[in-house]
Image 1 (cartoon, one colour):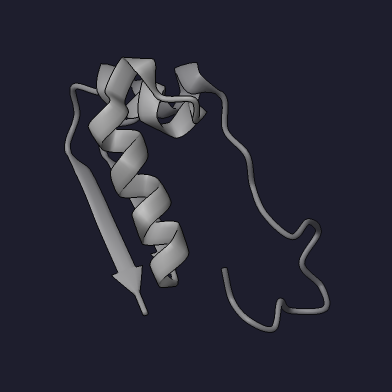
Image 2: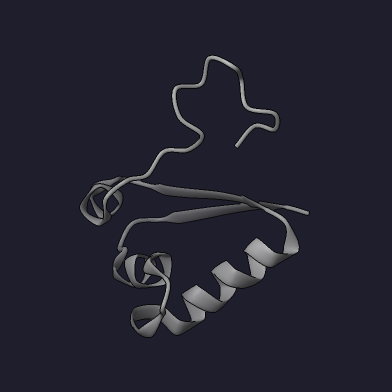
Length: 71
């Protein structure tokens, strides 16, 4: 997410449903900060048993997943 957000941005973020994510040809995840990276790594490691939806969704994904992280 750009920081600062453009003033004309209609919403601060976009949320997609599980089915929308799983029907995509490719999944791209961008995140910033060590805390977010650790959260995502834990969710991926926990897979289907993750308390976080992203972990459960990614466990079902069959398409390529590109993860981009910035400190």
